[in-house]
Image (cartoon, rainbow, N blue to C red; front, side, top):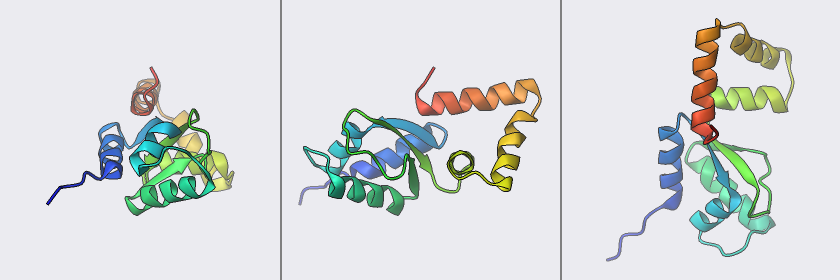
Length: 122
């Protein structure tokens, strides 16, 4: 019996290893889903596969463009809170964003560096 590798479990492991957030081109997520082309039903399936593994994404909905870059993050993480604070402004979101700005400089730089490294940007 052949063992199949769940590519979305690999995505989950990569996201976790990269500090709970990672940037992906949609082409990579499309390939993980086993498709040759992206379309509205494929991006919905990709979104569902990510969510079933405790992962969210931005933007939401996912774009149907193979060249587009998206963020995949662990649900319940500070990254999710930050994404939500920016995408759906609220008093609580402003407080959360402010908490990043109110940190001392060294602590803020360390968190920013971790977020940048986790997203693959340097």
